[in-house]
Amino acid sequence: MLPAATASLLGPLLTAWALLPFAQGQTPNYTRPVFLCGGDVTGESGYLASEGFPNLYPPNKECIWTITVPESQTVSLSFRVFDLELHPSCRYDALEVFAGSGTSGQRLGRFCGTFRPAPLVAPGNQVTLRMTSDEGTGGRGFLLWYSGRATSGTGETSLTSAFPLSWPRPRRRPHPALTSTPRAWSPHCLPYPFSSLTAPSVPPPRLLSPSSRSHPPLFQAPPQAQGGNGSPTRGWNGRPGVTGTSTNFAGGGWRRPREP
Image (cartoon, rainbow, N blue to C red; front, side, top):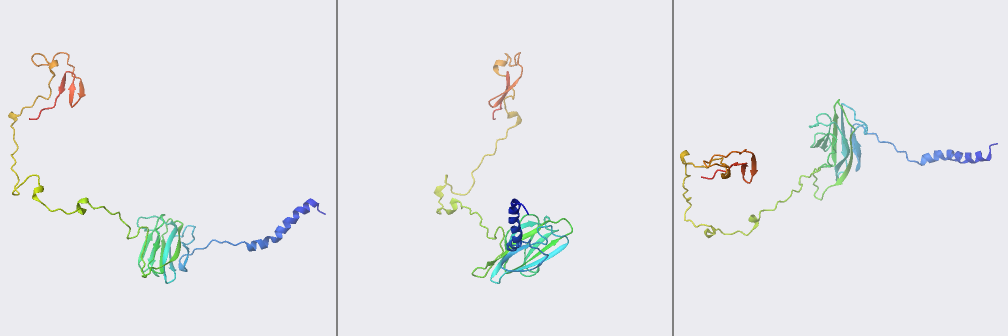
Protein backbone atom coordinates (compact mmCIF):
# COMPACT_ATOMS: atom_id res chain seq x y z
CA MET A 1 0.00 0.00 0.00
CA LEU A 2 1.13 3.58 -0.69
CA PRO A 3 1.78 5.92 2.16
CA ALA A 4 -0.96 8.38 2.98
CA ALA A 5 1.18 11.36 1.90
CA THR A 6 1.80 9.89 -1.57
CA ALA A 7 -1.85 9.03 -2.08
CA SER A 8 -2.86 12.56 -1.21
CA LEU A 9 -0.59 13.92 -3.97
CA LEU A 10 -1.60 11.45 -6.67
CA GLY A 11 -5.28 12.15 -6.27
CA PRO A 12 -5.31 15.70 -7.65
CA LEU A 13 -2.84 14.77 -10.42
CA LEU A 14 -5.03 11.92 -11.67
CA THR A 15 -8.08 14.14 -11.58
CA ALA A 16 -6.39 16.84 -13.67
CA TRP A 17 -5.15 14.25 -16.16
CA ALA A 18 -8.66 12.86 -16.56
CA LEU A 19 -10.18 16.30 -17.17
CA LEU A 20 -7.47 17.41 -19.63
CA PRO A 21 -9.29 16.27 -22.81
CA PHE A 22 -12.41 18.16 -21.80
CA ALA A 23 -10.40 21.28 -21.04
CA GLN A 24 -8.69 21.10 -24.44
CA GLY A 25 -12.03 20.82 -26.14
CA GLN A 26 -13.22 24.06 -24.57
CA THR A 27 -10.07 26.03 -25.52
CA PRO A 28 -10.33 27.84 -28.92
CA ASN A 29 -7.88 26.59 -31.51
CA TYR A 30 -6.27 29.68 -33.07
CA THR A 31 -4.49 29.07 -36.38
CA ARG A 32 -2.55 31.51 -38.53
CA PRO A 33 -4.33 32.32 -41.79
CA VAL A 34 -2.65 31.15 -44.95
CA PHE A 35 -2.42 33.80 -47.68
CA LEU A 36 -2.24 32.49 -51.21
CA CYS A 37 -1.19 34.01 -54.52
CA GLY A 38 -4.26 35.74 -55.93
CA GLY A 39 -7.92 34.89 -55.73
CA ASP A 40 -11.39 36.41 -55.37
CA VAL A 41 -12.30 37.98 -52.03
CA THR A 42 -15.92 38.81 -51.21
CA GLY A 43 -17.33 40.41 -48.09
CA GLU A 44 -17.86 43.68 -46.30
CA SER A 45 -14.43 43.69 -44.61
CA GLY A 46 -11.40 41.56 -43.95
CA TYR A 47 -7.64 41.18 -44.25
CA LEU A 48 -5.67 40.54 -47.42
CA ALA A 49 -1.93 39.90 -47.63
CA SER A 50 0.73 38.81 -50.07
CA GLU A 51 1.59 35.16 -50.56
CA GLY A 52 3.19 33.59 -47.49
CA PHE A 53 2.90 36.71 -45.32
CA PRO A 54 4.57 37.39 -42.88
CA ASN A 55 7.32 35.37 -44.53
CA LEU A 56 9.20 36.67 -47.56
CA TYR A 57 7.17 36.59 -50.74
CA PRO A 58 8.49 34.23 -53.45
CA PRO A 59 10.38 35.57 -56.48
CA ASN A 60 9.24 35.57 -60.10
CA LYS A 61 5.53 35.66 -59.29
CA GLU A 62 2.48 37.57 -60.45
CA CYS A 63 -0.50 37.46 -58.11
CA ILE A 64 -3.88 39.07 -58.83
CA TRP A 65 -6.64 39.57 -56.25
CA THR A 66 -10.14 40.93 -56.83
CA ILE A 67 -12.02 42.39 -53.86
CA THR A 68 -15.80 42.78 -54.08
CA VAL A 69 -18.01 44.50 -51.50
CA PRO A 70 -21.81 44.98 -51.64
CA GLU A 71 -23.03 47.00 -54.60
CA SER A 72 -24.22 49.90 -52.45
CA GLN A 73 -20.70 50.43 -51.10
CA THR A 74 -17.24 51.36 -52.31
CA VAL A 75 -13.99 49.57 -51.50
CA SER A 76 -11.67 51.20 -48.96
CA LEU A 77 -8.10 49.94 -48.54
CA SER A 78 -5.97 50.63 -45.47
CA PHE A 79 -2.42 49.27 -45.52
CA ARG A 80 -1.08 47.94 -42.22
CA VAL A 81 2.28 46.47 -43.37
CA PHE A 82 4.19 47.22 -46.56
CA ASP A 83 7.63 45.84 -47.43
CA LEU A 84 8.58 45.51 -51.09
CA GLU A 85 11.86 46.01 -52.89
CA LEU A 86 12.53 49.71 -53.32
CA HIS A 87 13.09 51.37 -56.69
CA PRO A 88 12.37 54.97 -57.78
CA SER A 89 9.94 53.78 -60.47
CA CYS A 90 9.00 50.43 -58.82
CA ARG A 91 10.67 48.58 -61.68
CA TYR A 92 11.40 45.28 -59.94
CA ASP A 93 8.73 44.49 -57.33
CA ALA A 94 5.47 46.43 -57.20
CA LEU A 95 1.86 46.36 -56.06
CA GLU A 96 -0.68 47.92 -58.42
CA VAL A 97 -4.27 48.82 -57.60
CA PHE A 98 -6.93 49.02 -60.33
CA ALA A 99 -10.53 50.14 -60.18
CA GLY A 100 -13.07 47.46 -61.05
CA SER A 101 -12.57 43.81 -61.90
CA GLY A 102 -9.39 43.06 -63.82
CA THR A 103 -6.28 45.04 -64.66
CA SER A 104 -7.78 46.90 -67.62
CA GLY A 105 -9.50 49.54 -65.49
CA GLN A 106 -8.15 52.77 -64.12
CA ARG A 107 -4.92 52.32 -62.21
CA LEU A 108 -5.27 53.95 -58.83
CA GLY A 109 -1.67 53.53 -57.74
CA ARG A 110 1.63 51.69 -58.08
CA PHE A 111 3.60 51.16 -54.87
CA CYS A 112 6.91 49.72 -53.66
CA GLY A 113 9.42 50.28 -50.89
CA THR A 114 8.85 50.21 -47.16
CA PHE A 115 6.53 53.21 -46.65
CA ARG A 116 2.88 52.36 -46.24
CA PRO A 117 0.70 53.82 -48.99
CA ALA A 118 -2.02 56.24 -48.01
CA PRO A 119 -5.57 54.90 -47.63
CA LEU A 120 -7.40 54.43 -50.92
CA VAL A 121 -11.09 54.54 -51.77
CA ALA A 122 -12.01 53.01 -55.12
CA PRO A 123 -14.79 54.54 -57.23
CA GLY A 124 -16.84 51.33 -57.16
CA ASN A 125 -17.56 48.15 -55.25
CA GLN A 126 -14.70 46.23 -56.88
CA VAL A 127 -10.96 46.69 -56.87
CA THR A 128 -8.13 44.57 -58.30
CA LEU A 129 -4.63 44.21 -56.90
CA ARG A 130 -1.68 42.88 -58.87
CA MET A 131 1.67 42.12 -57.24
CA THR A 132 4.72 41.30 -59.34
CA SER A 133 8.18 40.24 -58.18
CA ASP A 134 11.43 39.58 -60.01
CA GLU A 135 14.17 37.08 -59.26
CA GLY A 136 16.03 39.42 -56.91
CA THR A 137 15.71 40.31 -53.26
CA GLY A 138 12.24 40.43 -51.77
CA GLY A 139 10.53 41.48 -48.56
CA ARG A 140 7.59 40.53 -46.39
CA GLY A 141 5.07 41.88 -48.85
CA PHE A 142 1.93 43.68 -47.71
CA LEU A 143 -0.97 43.36 -45.30
CA LEU A 144 -4.09 45.48 -45.77
CA TRP A 145 -7.57 45.83 -44.35
CA TYR A 146 -10.40 46.22 -46.85
CA SER A 147 -13.88 47.42 -45.99
CA GLY A 148 -17.00 48.71 -47.66
CA ARG A 149 -17.97 52.35 -47.42
CA ALA A 150 -21.42 53.74 -48.06
CA THR A 151 -21.66 56.04 -51.06
CA SER A 152 -22.85 59.63 -50.79
CA GLY A 153 -26.41 60.67 -51.42
CA THR A 154 -25.68 61.59 -55.02
CA GLY A 155 -24.07 58.23 -55.69
CA GLU A 156 -20.75 59.85 -56.56
CA THR A 157 -17.47 58.50 -55.25
CA SER A 158 -13.93 59.70 -55.61
CA LEU A 159 -10.41 58.45 -55.23
CA THR A 160 -8.81 59.70 -52.03
CA SER A 161 -5.25 59.54 -50.80
CA ALA A 162 -3.16 61.02 -48.03
CA PHE A 163 -3.68 64.51 -49.49
CA PRO A 164 -7.05 65.00 -51.21
CA LEU A 165 -7.26 66.85 -54.47
CA SER A 166 -9.13 69.67 -52.72
CA TRP A 167 -6.48 70.07 -50.05
CA PRO A 168 -7.03 73.51 -48.46
CA ARG A 169 -4.43 76.11 -49.22
CA PRO A 170 -3.60 79.04 -46.97
CA ARG A 171 -5.53 82.15 -47.93
CA ARG A 172 -3.50 85.26 -48.51
CA ARG A 173 -4.71 88.53 -47.10
CA PRO A 174 -5.13 91.14 -49.87
CA HIS A 175 -3.11 94.30 -49.78
CA PRO A 176 -4.89 97.14 -47.90
CA ALA A 177 -4.62 99.34 -50.98
CA LEU A 178 -6.77 96.86 -52.91
CA THR A 179 -9.52 96.70 -50.30
CA SER A 180 -9.65 100.38 -49.22
CA THR A 181 -12.16 102.87 -50.57
CA PRO A 182 -11.18 104.01 -54.08
CA ARG A 183 -10.17 107.66 -54.34
CA ALA A 184 -10.44 110.00 -57.29
CA TRP A 185 -7.22 111.27 -58.82
CA SER A 186 -6.56 114.99 -58.51
CA PRO A 187 -3.58 116.98 -59.80
CA HIS A 188 -3.58 119.03 -56.59
CA CYS A 189 -2.26 115.97 -54.75
CA LEU A 190 1.06 116.26 -56.56
CA PRO A 191 3.89 117.97 -54.66
CA TYR A 192 4.77 120.24 -57.62
CA PRO A 193 2.36 121.67 -60.17
CA PHE A 194 3.10 121.11 -63.82
CA SER A 195 1.49 121.98 -67.08
CA SER A 196 3.02 119.34 -69.32
CA LEU A 197 4.76 116.04 -69.08
CA THR A 198 8.15 117.39 -70.08
CA ALA A 199 11.10 116.35 -68.00
CA PRO A 200 13.07 119.15 -66.34
CA SER A 201 16.42 120.05 -67.87
CA VAL A 202 19.35 118.52 -66.07
CA PRO A 203 22.78 120.08 -66.55
CA PRO A 204 25.40 117.71 -67.89
CA PRO A 205 28.02 116.46 -65.49
CA ARG A 206 31.08 118.65 -65.08
CA LEU A 207 34.12 117.04 -66.61
CA LEU A 208 37.43 117.69 -64.94
CA SER A 209 40.73 117.52 -66.71
CA PRO A 210 43.65 115.76 -65.04
CA SER A 211 45.36 119.11 -64.53
CA SER A 212 42.37 120.64 -62.76
CA ARG A 213 42.07 117.90 -60.17
CA SER A 214 43.42 118.87 -56.83
CA HIS A 215 43.51 116.22 -54.16
CA PRO A 216 45.43 116.33 -50.93
CA PRO A 217 48.24 113.83 -50.70
CA LEU A 218 47.26 110.40 -49.53
CA PHE A 219 50.07 110.43 -47.01
CA GLN A 220 50.84 113.42 -44.91
CA ALA A 221 52.84 113.60 -41.73
CA PRO A 222 51.19 115.45 -38.86
CA PRO A 223 52.56 118.87 -38.00
CA GLN A 224 54.23 117.66 -34.84
CA ALA A 225 56.25 115.14 -36.88
CA GLN A 226 57.37 117.59 -39.56
CA GLY A 227 60.41 119.79 -39.56
CA GLY A 228 60.70 123.32 -40.71
CA ASN A 229 60.69 122.38 -44.39
CA GLY A 230 57.75 119.93 -44.09
CA SER A 231 59.85 116.78 -43.98
CA PRO A 232 59.38 114.15 -41.26
CA THR A 233 61.59 114.56 -38.25
CA ARG A 234 63.88 111.96 -36.88
CA GLY A 235 62.49 109.20 -34.76
CA TRP A 236 59.38 108.51 -36.86
CA ASN A 237 58.96 104.74 -36.80
CA GLY A 238 55.88 104.31 -39.03
CA ARG A 239 54.05 101.86 -36.80
CA PRO A 240 50.41 101.56 -37.95
CA GLY A 241 47.37 101.89 -35.77
CA VAL A 242 43.64 102.16 -36.62
CA THR A 243 41.81 105.12 -35.09
CA GLY A 244 38.39 106.42 -36.12
CA THR A 245 37.86 106.49 -39.86
CA SER A 246 41.51 106.67 -40.96
CA THR A 247 44.48 104.37 -40.69
CA ASN A 248 47.05 106.29 -38.69
CA PHE A 249 50.73 105.73 -38.20
CA ALA A 250 52.81 106.82 -35.25
CA GLY A 251 53.87 110.17 -36.61
CA GLY A 252 52.03 109.85 -39.93
CA GLY A 253 48.72 108.68 -41.33
CA TRP A 254 46.56 107.71 -44.28
CA ARG A 255 43.98 110.40 -44.67
CA ARG A 256 40.87 110.34 -46.77
CA PRO A 257 41.03 112.53 -49.86
CA ARG A 258 38.55 115.33 -49.89
CA GLU A 259 35.85 115.49 -52.50
CA PRO A 260 36.73 117.76 -55.45
